[in-house]
Length: 351
Image 1 (cartoon, rainbow, N blue to C red):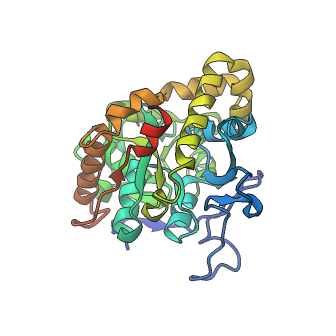
Image 2: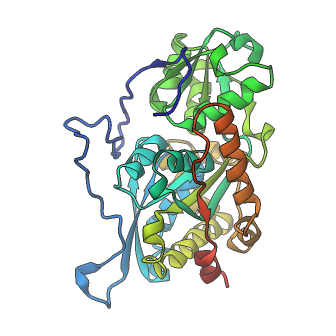
Image 3: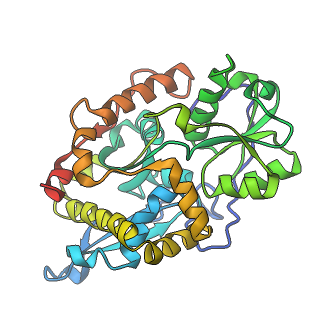
């Protein structure tokens, strides 16, 4: 079990989204350890007929960088590549982490922080990185309610994060700027959807958030920014990972998925009036608000990803650096494996 400071107050997560979502298996009624819900996540041939396209189901949660998988599905960009893409919606990113750990997922969009955490908790399923979805440069934020204007004022106060190590990571990096640590604040674990209201009601003084929840916190609580990922460039990448046992089995379909993802980005660039309303709607944002939050993300085309995914390239170095920070924060134990980086699907997708 991951270490948590003595000041942490655990609050059981309850998902309250009105949209149809896949709940975190740890919060579902009737969930029993060892009983695994099975999603159609493995590549399969429909009806066993070789002439039909392969089907790949990929989980998504609310984060602008994940929307291009959804856009590829909605606009039929998968069919143009000769496979069928289905996205399965989760209430928040931590639900995806739990499902991967439970063996329900063999492919997932994660942050590098979450991928390193998975390797520490389930070394035999330590995921393999095959694509960089985006880099967070302002998207991940530490917000505070009015009246709290500096990080130093958080000493002894309540700060909300989700159960994911990403929130704790962002919070800890912010606190370090003032010589503080997680032990100097009272950390509350809350579901993402509840955090904006908790800020507005004064239940917490600050929170680690990202779009669209950060925008909701600004709307409900007039929250102000104390820190964001622009101050830690190169530390938070969103990546697409695959279970190592599935990597070889999916050798033919993964390049197709990468090309469909690239086509979705091209559609957004060349036909923004068509693409942006589709992805903004799923995020619960207006098209203009979606454009604004995307300013906190950096995307990389497939040809740009070759140096990123190279041996000892930026992603590999990032994973090592993130692991060292998590060890220093006592979030994981030393000696855990690191996610591997594999550029073979990329090489096939963009030769």
